[in-house]
Length: 193
Image 1 (cartoon, rainbow, N blue to C red):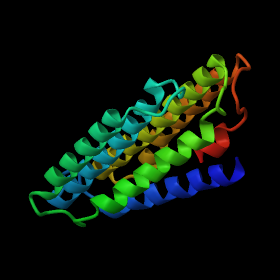
Image 2 (image 1 turned 60 degrees about the horizontal axis):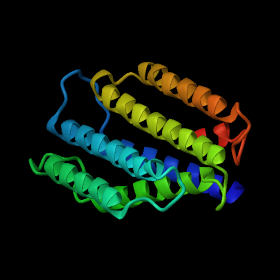
Image 3 (image 1 turned 90 degrees about the vertical axis):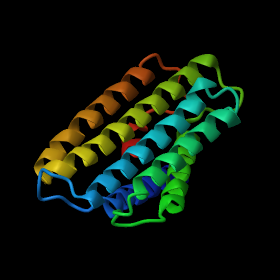
Image 4 (image 1 turned 120 degrees about the vertical axis):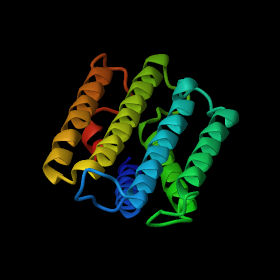
């Protein structure tokens, strides 16, 4: 678990670094074309992560995710990135592949860190699905905070915005573990980081 958790932490850190890279900081309420591009890319990145995690949760982790579901997430991401870069105003262009790879690595590491062992009971699978959904919601919410921060440029407001999804994530993990059927317990902090 430790090496997988470490991988999740490194991948999340890489994603945050890429979000910062594609979204130049804002000092004004009106977004520049480059900031609009970065904002669109962040949205596409969050949606891809959430869509891929949803593919795993639809099977209740009892089977591999549907290939068509995963492909749909890929296609939407590719289309959204191309649309963001089409006007030619992006701060960075041609970075879809590197960001896409980071999202894929994040989702894979997250699933591996939370997924119960083969042959796990239905309650263990239910717990793992709840944890995956909580992680997905947190990722999406924090990316929305980043997008909102483009118009405010305030680290204080960003920190306040981050606190809500973090609290909800912790509460969701606690609730999932309460029945006592989880394959892993006490891992919210490791996954959250």
